[in-house]
Length: 218
Length: 218
DNA sequence: AATAATTTTTAGATTAGTCTAAAAATTATT
DNA sequence: AATAATTTTTAGACTAATCTAAAAATTATT
Ligand SMILES: [Mn+2]
Ligand SMILES: [Mn+2]
Ligand SMILES: [Mn+2]
Ligand SMILES: [Mn+2]
Image (cartoon, rainbow over all chains, first blue to last red; front, side, top):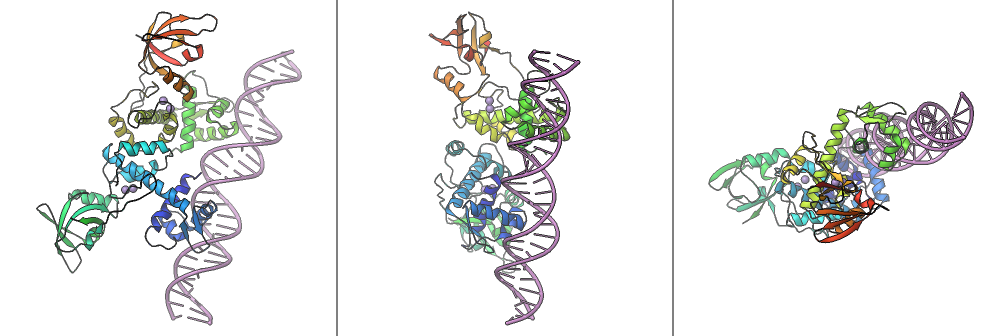
């Protein structure tokens, strides 16, 4: 049995550990969870006790297979609920995360398998992130950051790195959604801003924007 | 701000106080919540402090208007989710309660108003219980217990008193669902069992069954 | 290699919710 | 009206999760 709080710690460790194979530090977890390092130490001991993580004092943690299972399952639920909110309840993609943070903790196998079927077994959430299947398998698509695309490339938006409301609303305002086709026209050497063309319209976007938008070449 | 636990106590007090205008006793709450009387006393003090209930030592509690508002809102959410589970996710009516017990605590105005719209503003849940509207108004239909119907009455099933899995499965097995028409044919004086006719089929049901099935005369 | 800065852990408190056992109040029975 | 039975409250303890402040370990800098 895993408590709601434990689930949140496990999820945080999962996200922090995804890139970079090394251990996740106490401070990193504390920052992610908006809590104090001392609280993290306590919890990490408990998670280790219950063998959700491997932990050696002062060395940070990594998820065990058991821990990874829990994490992936929560991510699956989170993303399925996000799809539900957008597809069925007309939420916009910048409104879903907060509600999904709560819905992801509802424990019912049947609920999730039926929801999955009801949604038509979606493979990606509204932000382009992959949805693990019931066995925990995640199929990843080969996407690159728009900032890494070359001049002249034709791309399709497939995801966002940052999914803060501010960023998503910026994209909405500029008619950029998942599936939108665009062409990279020019890169300004001074600030790495790039000019892109969407349909007939040209748009200049900063390097920071380009660094948070995933595309695939088309 | 009201915690999940407080919500559950408030809901229990609401259900216990619905019939009979008198105060709800500590022991009654303890039984309903499957907890100890001493825990109830502690919580009841806190709820009183926060003015969700009126409480005088040794005299039990009643919900204040503020408390009633919270209770009705939880009931609304619980019943809307039950409709969702049955109508959209193919749950049967004996499976929904437990999951709804968790979903009812998700706090998002938009989630519930959109869910309500998505479901077509249902007025009753899968057990025939009325769904309060967003202002908390509950419209009650005039239903009677089948045990109170007279010989010769033609009725339609509109709800259940008990919604335990055992009872609901009994009804399923005997093709009794909400909306089912039936006629009261005979009452056996010895045990108050009654013979009913559904379509062409006769069925003998015990007084206990008849005491847990709501019907309206047709 | 010694010292300074940073990170992590420990020690001790706090809050929400629960429990057992005993005391106090209420209600029922003689 | 006195006693017995029941209900309710209090007192004190426990667990989960958190915090602050101080100690210990690690890492960075001189
Ligand atoms: Mn999210
Ligand atoms: Mn997402
Ligand atoms: Mn229910
Ligand atoms: Mn119901």
